[in-house]
Image 1: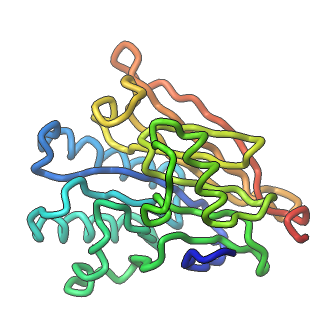
Image 2: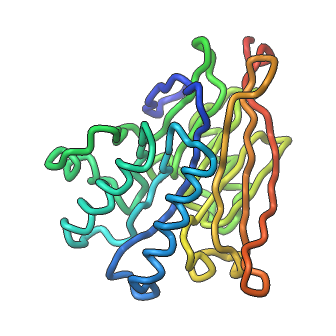
Image 3: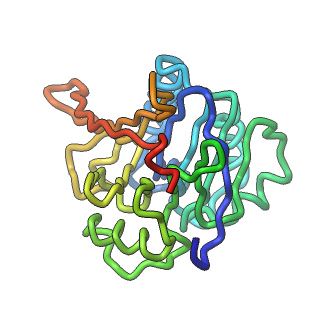
Length: 244
């Protein structure tokens, strides 16, 4: 699998929610306490409605490297109570989360020390997840197709496996390449993303009814006349075809 370091994860039996780039800093200039609260409330409702068993955060929970430790602790404890299992893959803005987490009780949360993770079913890799491969990319994130293509090369993702990434701040999916990017996930995403009317972007995966597969949906939500309007892009990954 190349020179990158990976965490290996067995695919859960229940639904998985992937989110990225929350950037929930209390001191970030474009945020208000109300906007942070709205994002938190939306995530809480989404986890309940979709019956999420595992929440996977693909980096950049925060925006600034140096923020109040009490705020970091509050967010980590809040995340820890959302689902049965929380997995955090730190992004370029929160690489030091592991050190902070050791000082707190977050029993349901795993903070990965690796730069990427690979989900396996029956020992077979089906989905690779990364934020930015620890900065090991060359392409500009403003060009998500190039960014994802480069990440596939750096991570040596097998041809039949899907790659899911954060960091780009714009939802994008390429079925031929088998790669997608998500994020950011917050109410003021229009200020953080080239897609200025974007509100939320996330990836929801759940066991498929047959062929030992997982079904996944990249969901993009935008504000239209005061309401959230959703677009959904469905994919499948896993199954016997990956056993090569």
